[in-house]
Image (cartoon, one colour):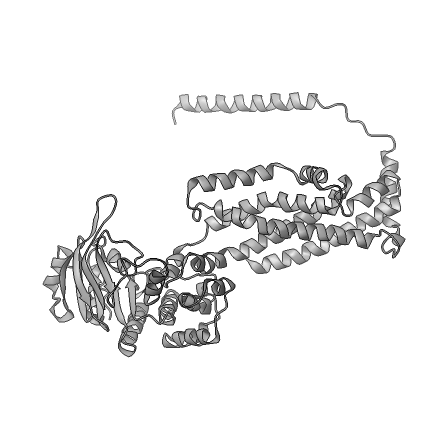
Length: 255
Length: 262
């Protein structure tokens, strides 16, 4: 469970990215965060694993404060949280296997990782993760030989290999075409159901959000302006989140 | 463009041309009349005949100093020198990379150290080390080991600056500490370039090691300069042949490995 307790984030230049966010996300939920660019979606997500620091309030993960965590306890908490990025953030020169294995670094000593020695079980875990996204035959290809959609699925496998309980996805389909968007979102939905992994996903496309989410959180200028089950998120609600009528390009269509 | 501007531009060009011409005239007028020694033709034909009738007996001599032994020493100087510089350059290349180093001060300091080292030609460094540790191959190793740090550090720092750091964010998110993050997100991107530069520097060092002996820093240069001073052209011939064969073979191997790395 993730708890936001009165969380605010003000950037040094005075911009408010998060304003008094106070909510809980239960285990197994598929939460989609929507809002205009600059509404604080990315900051919201990155404050959960503390890639960004918050300026006020506290975030608890399963009752433990990540805001206050230091050193190795912060690394251990991050290990429980997988993350998927818009630009995949793979090491493009390395093999797919090595990228997936990099999800395991949190489990081993620094010395062992300097030598790059992963135990046999880790390779099995990585292979299973690749099977789950249907890429086992690409395990020994170089990451940059894969298509965009495949690279994004490698980064999902990396999060799976991490054996995280929660996956954060920051615009995971923003650089993909409609066809691969569907594959990647289907993978995330399947993992959410089969492994009961909590998903917190930032999305740009309203129809994709409606199709996959169980709950929608709408952000406007850092404030939560809507938080409810997907059924209640009507077009009027979206217009309210966006502060204007919904545009055509906020629909992916063809799905 | 207005006619006035065109006129201005043309005057500027003519002025530059005149200045360059004057510099050339001044420079050439300072050169003494080129003189070719009367004996030069004779020396040249002696060297050529030496190369075509080399002193094969010098190739291997179980009793004393022979070609193979000195060639091996030359190779060892180049190898060890390259190895030392490849280790020494690592901290400098990361400290001099703007995207990795923490402060501008660190980048500035490291870059200045690297350029300072690059100022010295290998031969000058070897002369300094001969004074420090005495003549012999060890002085040559140190000269190449220190001298190459300047170039390797600069080239590797530049390749570090060009890597994609987005994977670093991903590694931090998986719970990696800074060392693990570095090993997984940065090192794999730099490693191929690192090996390629080190191999290239090895090729350069091998050539440099062949002349280090001339000033007494070990290797094939010493017997070469002795043979030249006693006009033993057959000996000169075999030494030159030995250098050519060794450098050509090792260059070919090294470039083949490099082309596979990138």
